[in-house]
Length: 257
Image 1 (cartoon, helix red, strand yellow):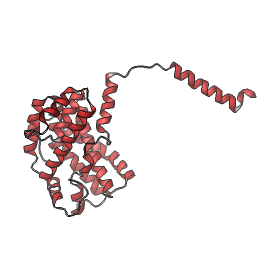
Image 2: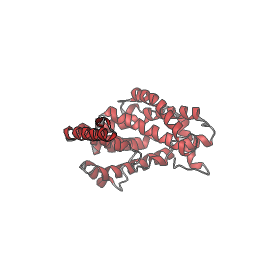
Image 3: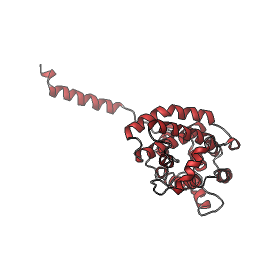
């Protein structure tokens, strides 16, 4: 009877746990594990890159009554993902495949000429410059990031567009191109849903549910537009481009774009 007492059970449980902890081998973190931690940090919303200051045209779409409810939001996000895949994913891919300064400068200059919408162009350069600043401060072991920032900081020859900077940083960190492209699509989707929540279009829980549902569409878009050269970059949603361009003319606005 005494062996079945609560005290005895507790003692056996503590002893069992202690044995398990003592027998657990302590293995060093490998390269793949380190890359995963870095990947999660790059995708973490706490990284101060300024992405949450932009709504990807959602605020303008709401004020123009083109997005009014959850179904409209779902359609809007899918169109944003389609346009991101067709227009920006080629720059992300090429920058990650050739993560060096010379190739990045050409991609950045080409993207500057490609983005004709002033609002989206300013949003891209703002996020890109912030991402490079943060990455150079966080990933101090990557000397190429420090050199890049020192060389081009204040230079008028580059604009630090977000897509090319994102691909470059992920390529220097060591991510393969598929992960880089999927990560960029995820960041875009995450930021739009965050904007929808702060605009009170949808609640946090409903936004999480909808994001989980739209993830299948995001993967489909990524597979559709992945591994393309910048020569194939194209605009598939001109209405989104027009909406985002209207953002600067709104009397009252919460977001920068």
